[in-house]
Length: 194
Image 1 (cartoon, helix red, strand yellow):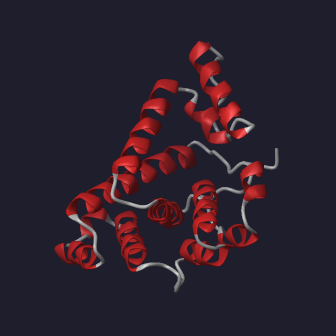
Image 2 (tube, one colour):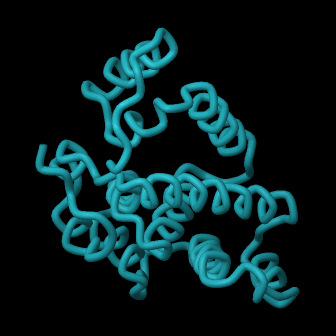
């Protein structure tokens, strides 16, 4: 990343220790967000709460995050969420989603959410009432549409911070990803070789 590591005070050490315990290593984005452990924890908890209480399935959330990250050109989140989506369906469907290609295995709701995420990343001011009606037609309630929109915005914010400050995808993250996912992520920062 472009910034140095923050001074290892108690809150920084606590965040890094928790990350290492959870993942087995400290991911690159955690090192960046260690500049503000309080913000990282609060932001992460808000995203978790939203996902937990939304009317979206785990697969739909993975599809939303994969689409948002890939449309935004974020390689790290595309690899991470593409791998999660592949675990919930299959690698070829997840790879097609990342590339923006047709993916016949997507559900009607997932297709609608994919289109919604793409539209928001491209230009949130260009969305229309017709876009919302298409989401309704796919079976999404106003509450689910709101939750999906906030999840998309949270993912965009997260990707923007990481990308702007030079965070590269972790080697370990790439090693755990299906080959089809890695082949589809042809954008963003290259995988860290350290």
